[in-house]
Length: 352
Ligand code: AMP
Ligand code: MG
Image (cartoon, rainbow, N blue to C red; front, side):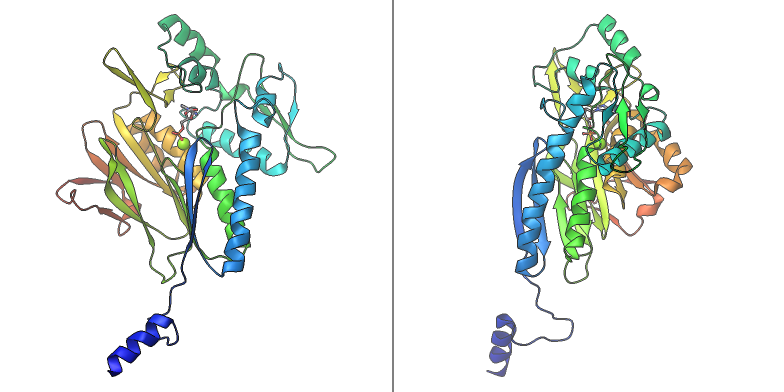
């Protein structure tokens, strides 16, 4: 009887036991943005979570309006059709995104190159009208991919905005970093509203974890098995951390028995064939996760591992899955990376 009363009081939330705090119900919502379904889970007081929901939707719409390559009134479209002229950035944070992206292009030696857009378009990944360009066409496209030809100026206040200029014929695409950038911006908005526990899933394996779960446990996020995209082969524990995966399984088409995916090698303008099936990056910055997962996919396992060793300042860890099914993870994921149920017999190589 006493037990039953205790249970009833606990269930009603009228009695709090030490270590047994009542967890508020999460506010969950989904939206379609940046070509994918995004879902958000927020823990907090209802008045706060309500206003955050409005704020996140507003920010996503505004990012989409600025960064879309196809919408004719977007900032990126204006840059791509300026015929070599300078185009002012709409605000200082978009200019910061361009600077950060260019810095990642430089750091990765051009494995990430945001001027790959004419090649992306040529393969039909923008429209869905897929085709395989001829070798001559690919050679011409690869010759035009060159982030070093992009001119960026700094922001010097409202009267002298910063901007960007591309050589005639060059076009940029922020598709490799936009979801990560959005993840960082949205996480900042969530924190600014006083919410300290949230999971922002920006779709296609880009996730930002704000704080921990309400009880203090880390968020546990699955990494997709590239050979069975409905299953997760591993789980990574995240607290105030982001994670992003790039893989050939995410967007591809098949022609004459060959699979062609959306991650291109800037040297060849063709799908990157580095022997990897997917790369997952874990970092406090979602932009770093997004940009580097694409770049490491282009580099491959060996070069990617060396890149990780050489760039501790980028503050990231990585999980590589090769096309032959080998799983490799960097040493810094110790205690945060676990094989998922059904995969516990798989061997994991730790990269030092
Ligand atoms: P992600 O899905 O983040 O790996 O980014 C892939 C998207 O970025 C593609 O759909 C293209 O729009 C673009 N892209 C493809 N290859 C590259 C590359 N090597 N560097 C920069 N952007 C790329
Ligand atoms: Mg990316």
